[in-house]
Image (tube, rainbow, N blue to C red; front, side):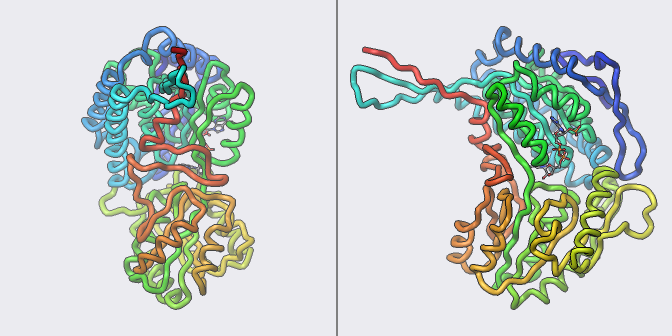
Length: 481
Ligand code: TAP
């Protein structure tokens, strides 16, 4: 288990010697002490990334050469998949099969961007047809420079991969700050990159508090691009910091995503997807479909099945066989989710099931998944992201009403619809004001497809070719002939 910062190809202790504790949310025990970087460490990391970009030639390598490193990282992750997945469970609490899936996905992400790096060689420039034939123009793609990446704790390694893989593929160098709560697998990524022979300075990992190490990255004048996933308030701070010296910014923020279920949906299938949409990863998913709108004709039946199935979910330590729901990531998160449920109750909602510590658990941040009904439309529980295993369920009468309720949010990350009527689902999909729309399912995520939100859910798109664009500038070159 790594504990030091990874800067300029070396494992180093923070200059000021600060540390932070890593706690296993299943047992509340400290499992590691890691470095707490300060602005001084971030400065060394950014300067190393700067040198790797400006002088050492990372952006000058061909896409195929960079792809070799990315593939070696992908293979390095896969070679240690179970070990890294286990570490993710200890650090984050998620069930092992989910962690194993995440780690495989992270490796796949490096492979995918290796492919796009190679394509940059084949298609580096675009000829532009001009209105004046005395000139010829072309558009060339070039890497932005040094990217500062800041990620949350819900998908620790996967979020790192979503940022590091496209950045390196594009030819950028990176300073990554993982969430203080879950830094262990990001450090393993550094170890894998080191074993893959990635040149010094190309990838730097600084662990520590967001308010210190994260703030130092966003304030650093030699960082060209900020890529962030996390909460809205921190996203706003990042945009404000970026505005000072016009850094490029991409933000993946929160959501309060709707799932509209029409009367012709199969109830068992709908319940399965509704549960997947909100209880996967303990509901700590930005795109979780946390507001479920059910046609009144099937509302009572669907709700009864949902409660029945929710009560059957096996809760426990993510390393135990058959566990579907692990602990929440931290005491703070646990208390926030409990407070949100209490707030809903006070606002007049009914807690139809769950919402309390399960019997038999006196340690760990465990919570019985909750189904809320009669949630007032102006209450926090309906409006604000809870980021836990809590779903609000509400009946609707007409398609028009469902779309209005679905879109009535300041967020617009994702939305889902379920119906056997192909024309209707396409119509509703088109009406959703959200960056990701799922038809007859919820949450499947593919490295090839764009990911990001409308409204306050963010700016820019990750994944697919859109994710690569985040790290590229476009240069116009015009010649007089
Ligand atoms: P945040 O508190 O926003 O933390 C995200 C990251 O930002 C962490 O690494 C954090 O460091 C860092 N940070 C905090 N303050 C900072 C500052 N002043 N300057 C720079 N960095 C700073 O969010 P969270 O609690 O980790 O995650 C929960 C929220 O993130 C939810 O709202 C959720 O919806 C959203 N989220 C969105 C997505 C997508 S894909 N849109 C994915 C996951 C989560 P520390 O860990 O040290 O605080």
